Length: 385
Image (tube, rainbow, N blue to C red):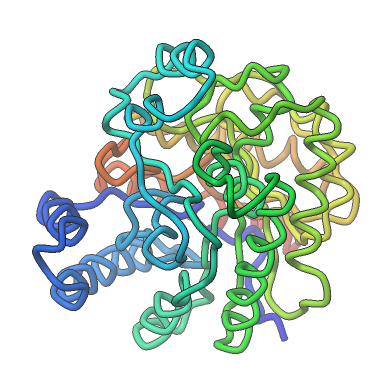
């Protein structure tokens, strides 16, 4: 049973900046120089600090800030067997299409050695829960509804699939995807049993398929897996997401899509509205689409069938604070297509997609949340009349 939440509930997309201490310990844990327990002793404190910041700001649905993760998808390498973390520079040494991969590296706004990717090097199997322990920890410290974020099945399949590494274990990325779906279904089942309120799957690479015409210029996945026609690839993504969710009920199921969130340089990030994706997003068996609209690159609000909208109203990559009146107007524009009870208010994306490369500070993040909360309060008064 879904818990009651107010009109225009405020939440986040997931990630918050990590402290230098936590980043140092993250590196030591990865090198095997400290135990997971030693890392979590500090990570627990950081999660509680992020929770405090959200509660003080008045956020309605909280997250743990993804403080235990190195980024929004590669953290699964610690939880799933058959994966190996490799930098893009290391991947360059094994791929056959070196010219194509070098073109991808040249597009990045960050050094190739600083981005790591979980590559399939064996049969993949869930060794431990991906985020169930995160939910359990939060539940002991807050009475607020909780959102848990997970990488989507298409993103995971694309990121894991490097044919030169997976051969001998999987003949195709479609075969790999079946095991990825199974892993996520196990996770969803356990999250529901623990009483999660909102499960958000992250599938940012869908925009790259729709807008980039198969050139694969983003870093969000291994970037070698989308050789097919974009339409066929998007249908494949829809089938994976729906297979993960088939038969599950209880929490709000959301899907987050953006256009890249690793750099403050907006000019290198993808552009395009949601119209090319609408046909496919309407087929998804999710309750909510969590979309970015605080950037001009996203175009105007698009109506979707039988979905609520997680409306992005602040840009996490900009230090400047948004004008409350502009946020209010953004919600008014969305109300032309969605009922008040079907609009959630959130940032466009996380504030630190990659742990070692935050796009803003905790202080700015909290101020942006407070602005959203104040606007939400005004909207509730307006729509309670």
